[in-house]
Length: 266
Image (tube, rainbow, N blue to C red; front, side):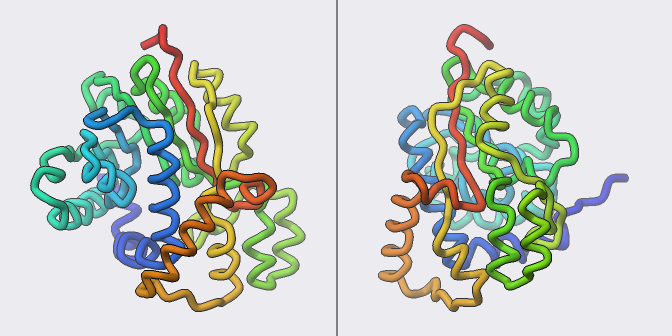
């Protein structure tokens, strides 16, 4: 019987990381970036590896028809708890599917979605090609594919900000690290992921940085108060702008790539 690898990390992930300034900025910035590309509601959205629903629940609030697919029963339980905090009409627009992303097409019965999200999942997989196949397959012709991944070009930032100079020097040529949750994570470049999507009939539309300054401040040990609403809003506005511009987006440890499925292929 398979064990739930996320069972012991659910609270740390869903109630801890996402409740910080950095977590809230991530959710806000990516939501705004998505809205630049998504068709209007009630378009269908498949969130692969959607966890506790932090990215897809705001879309349900906005009127989108959301299917949250995740392999972790514990994470889905947390998502169901969080769903109760949404308005009743938004709750009705959310469907849960327990399945591995590598079998997403079968799990959703061959349904095609106007947007397929996969945020912060690729880096945890040793074999990433099967998941990429499924993401692109589940997108409808002309549909959006949205992927958030670690930026291999900035692997030295975290150890350097934590003053782990030996690790930072080694990280310049590394694509793997032990992430903040204590799990091995793998990074990509925008160019690599663009090519991988193109080979699956998904053409990149735009890429963004996700967070920059709050990330550096966090690893440098600065205290950021998530309850200071005015400060949080100001921070999010700066991060949203930084994620759109060079050279700032290039320095982000995380990037968000949005592509479109070929209109003539299913």
